[in-house]
Amino acid sequence: MDRRRFLQASSLAGAAFAFGARPAWSATADAHVDIMLDESVGTIAPEIYGQFTEQLGGVIYDGVWVGEGSSIPNVHGIRKQLVDRLKQIHVPVIRWPGGCFADSYDWRDGVGPRKARPTRTNFWADDPDAARLHGKGVQLYEDNAFGTDEFIRFCHLTGAQPYMASNLRSLPALDFSRWVEYCNSPAGSTTLANRRAANGSAEPYNIKYWGVGNESWGCGGNFEPGEYAEEFRRFTTWVPHYGVPLSFIGSGPNDNNLEWTNGFFEALRKKNYMPSELRGWSVHYYTWNLSLGQTTDWVAGKRDALDFDETGWYELFLQGLYMEEIVQAQWGLLGEFDPRRNIKLVVDEYGAWYKPGTQLDPSHLLGQQVTLRDALLTAMTLDIFNRHAEKVGMAACAQLVNCLNALFMSHEDKFITTPVFHVFDMYAAHQGGQSLRTSFSSPQVHYQRNGKTASLAGLLGSASMNGKTVTLTATNPDLKAPKVTEIALRGSARIASSEASVLTNPDMHAHNSFENPEGVQVKKQSVQVQGDRVIVTLPPASVSSITIQLA
Ligand code: AHR
Image 1: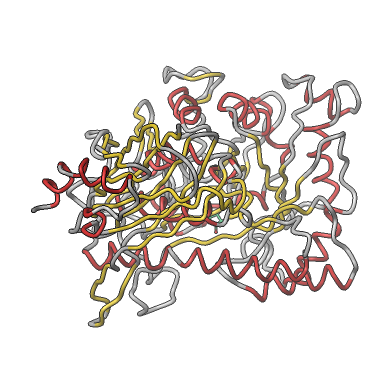
Image 2: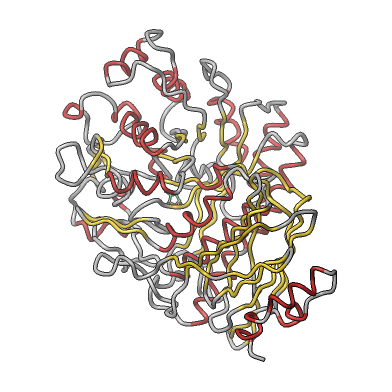
């Protein structure tokens, strides 16, 4: 009996299972998922589904900000379609203004009447990717049209919490506390509160999340960990609270650099300094080296976003799944310094980073196309965060629009969603749920890597429960084999109904474009409920979301 006919006949098998026997079709499934309903790993912080916007290339200008006088539909200058789509995915938090830009930014340049704001040299002006701009544009010479008040409005419109990154490399600590004062001091209380009122908001913004520098081991100052710890102490020793439970996010490691983490926390320990506001330790990990181990060079290791073969498809996942090791290792080390676990990991930059050449407009520095392959990588990454819900407190995909692992592409009046957007849409139901311990069993997939066979897990995912709704998300990275998957709920519960949606395409290079905005789309997938099990076929090269309603 072939698999499809077998599934059609499976209502009989379901009856057999109701009496406790393992149903006949169970043995023929390609993959099994067991969800332990009574074993919560922790609450999935909604903030894991955060986004990152930097004053870089086409992210803010052409992406977020179109200007108040624009004929492009906008709300106070902010692209309306973007706002609507961010509300759709319940965006919980947005990080800004960088990235590397943050450590060259004076927040004062971006407040007050727009015409009076100065034009400054953007951090990215000298990036090799900027050569194609021939010396022109806000990507090189930042006119500061978008500043603190515009960013906060963007957050308010979308429902996101703001997460601001401070300048630790090129401004003194006083400017940080003054920025907090501008944002959070009560109406009428300080000169800066009055200035904020003059700029449109008498009421304080009550911003909770503050990054203390960015990549302080690199563009944020090239510090040694001990040096950064010293700056961190200076920056955080006195910052006014105004009744807001401030959360400081320290500039953590590149990839899995344990020396950085160890050096920083050792230096704090020596000074007996561990402020309670230190609630997050940032981690940046990009999946960029697709050279199959041939080089570690940052430029030579990159490959094309669109032009890849089967090996390139699987290699992206092999490299991306290193995130799991980073989370486990960094968390383990953090525990030595923070046994009470006040500090969570904040993976505030992640995604695929390809070589230049597929950006939709020359002004989109670090712009690249986003394919189905990137959707699977993003889904795998979010599943890792969900599975480690007790460790990861926040994350931000780099970046929101027109840059790297973008959810959206826009240029002037054109605007589209990418396959990565669909992943965030499919995964939104996990926000705030209890992450459930879940086991996945499926044959591995194999591919050729430098003449040797490399292997990947054949099915990966995560599950959560929110009230009576169980959400399972899963990726099938196999380019050829669909997986008939048997999902079993362990624990006392009866399934009332189930449904599934799937993101896939027969072409592994599939992507959306202005000409073909619906090239990759989410579709409904049929499921069968058999007692306390759900049977669903996960197509090759797919991301799926299965919702199970409990009675
Ligand atoms: O996201 C692009 C850049 O990557 C960010 O500015 C920086 O923090 C990282 O190196």
